Amino acid sequence: MRALRRSALCGTEPFEIEARLRGKDGFFRWFLFRYNPLVELGCAKRWYVSATEIESRKQEEERVRKENVRLEERTRLAQELHDTLLQSFLSAAMQLSVAADGLPAESPVKRQLDRVLEIISQGAREGRNTIQGLRSSDPQKLDLVQALSRVPQEIGVPPSIASRVTVSGRQQPVQPPVWQEIYRIGREALLNAFRHSQGYECGM
Image (cartoon, rainbow, N blue to C red):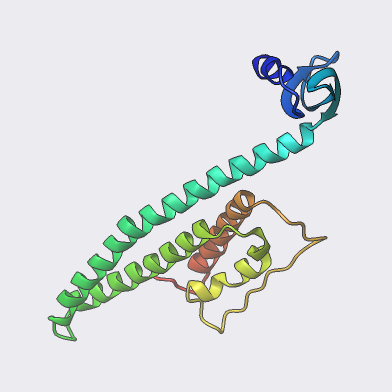
């Protein structure tokens, strides 16, 4: 910062510098320094400097940077899940389907294979939902109530079993990483409730 200032002070053009300074309280804060010259006969006779604290702006920039890093990581994970785990599920399902089709309808092995195919299909659907959630990056589109309300339909809960999501108090917007964690916890809780209730058997 000092080297940049020394170099710029040798010229006659206004310039800006961002720097962190430590105050009397011992905390560092970001400031924006603006330098404007008083030019006479082609030379800078005097410099006028103003300093504006930009700590909140820097914190917001850092938050956005970290959020972009998280979004990039979620996108990478979603791509890896799609290219590896989900494709393996689909490949296994195709081979099991071929094996099941070659068995007599009354064969107990066929019934077992059909059951395994149902489990794989359920896992594939859940995997696609997870991938879609990882790829979602627009906070304006993320509504927890709507997302959790769709869970019964996504996991194939029979229409005869009623479920609803209610909000106590005032709903607040949350950042995408927090939304994802809350959604996963809520979805897992709903899935376990449907699995282990006497009114619904999800086959896992």
